[in-house]
Structure formats: C-alpha cells, structure tokens
Length: 173
Length: 99
Image (cartoon, rainbow over all chains, first blue to last red; front, side):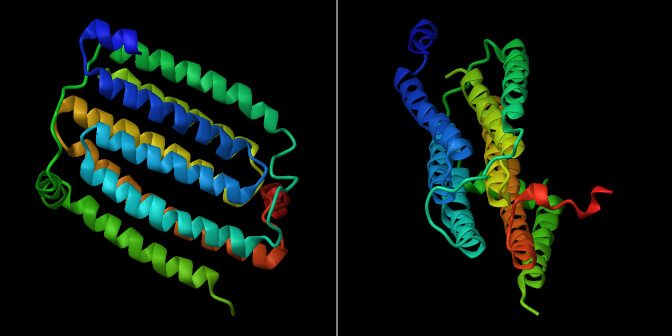
C-alpha cells in the first residue's frame, strides 16, 4: 500500500493511518466471530466500531463519525451488554456458541470475499479519492431536509415503532 | 488515497460478518455479526460519497445507522422474550415451525 501511495504520489500519511486502523479492525472483527466469550466479543466489537468511526474521519465524514460514536459505541453497545447480562448467568468462556456445521461458513465467506474483491478491483482499480476538507454539517442537513425528507420521516416512524415494539415485546405480563 | 482501500476493507468486514451469521449459534452473537455487515455497508456508502463529491452517501449512512439502532432494539427484545420462554437463546433449538 505504501509503495502504491508513493507511485501515485498520494498522501502517504493518510494511507499509513488507514492501513494501521484497517489491520486493527480486521483483527478485532475476526475476534468477534471466533472468541468463545460473549462479553469479549462485545468488547472486540467496540474496537471495530471505533475503527469504522476513525475511517469515516479519514474519508472526510466528520458528522457520520460522531454519529457512529454516539449511536454505536455509546447506545448500541450498552444495549448489547444489557442483552448479554439478561440472557445468561455465567461470565467467562462458554461452550456451544457455534453451530455444529460452523466450518461450512469459512468457504462461503472466502468465496464471497473473492467475488467481491474481483468485482471491486474490476470496477474501481484506478479510481483515486479526491483530497477534500471536512464536510460541513449544514450540507448534510440541507440534504436531509430537502431531497431526502420523506425517507427521514419514514426513519422517524421506524424508530418510534421500534421503541414501542421493543417495550411491548420485553414487558413482563 | 485509492477508492479500492475503503471498498476492500468493507468487503472483508462484510465477509467476516457473513461468516459470523452462519457460524454462530447464540442469538446475541448473530446480532453482533449483523452489526459488522451494516458497518461494512456504511463504510462503502461514505467512500462513494467522497468519490462523487456530494453528501448523499453520508446521508444514507446516517439513515442506515438509525435503522440499525432500531433493529438492535427490537432484535434484543425478541431475544429476551425467547430467553424468558425457553431459558436458552440457541438458534437451532427454535424449530417448532420445522414441520
């Protein structure tokens, strides 16, 4: 990646940062799907989500990065930890987290990765991303409130329905 | 910076998430793998927004984040309900509708 960057005279520091964060994210994601401790899986997932937020900043999407930290690292992870605590008694490694035929997932994932990489490299091999400053929040809000207003209202309704639905489902009686 | 960097990272995360969904038996772990998949998609959307020089992709990523939050809320409520009724959240034991 560094050699590539030098050849294309792109921002080397950006590429190095991207590579380090990406390696950490991939390692943490592999730990999420392989660890035998549910709580550890949730903590590795925090690392992946924080890495995604860092990549958003590298891609000049500050508002999305902040939302990622607020919603995912803040709210969703607390929800996951509550779910883990409420559904199991023992803390520590646990047997039977995987299906009997879990190994069949490996070839599926590898073949899928091969196909996706081939399609991506075929379509975007030489596309470079422009160097752009931070995206101002006003541009995003202009887009949310004008061309994408109807989806925005739909999302609001989905959140309301999900909140009420979750309460109705989890109520004890 | 090459666009392929972001897109390949998204593809790798997506495949790891797919493996998690296929391999895991615990319902909470499956929901975590679904989060990995959604984040891979978001990464692609933000990269495309940067590539095309507009913010449409970022708006879509924000919407996906909102839908993912709703999905986790309802999903965990359902897992809780299953656990309360059966004292277990192993997905392969939910086979009443198997026929």
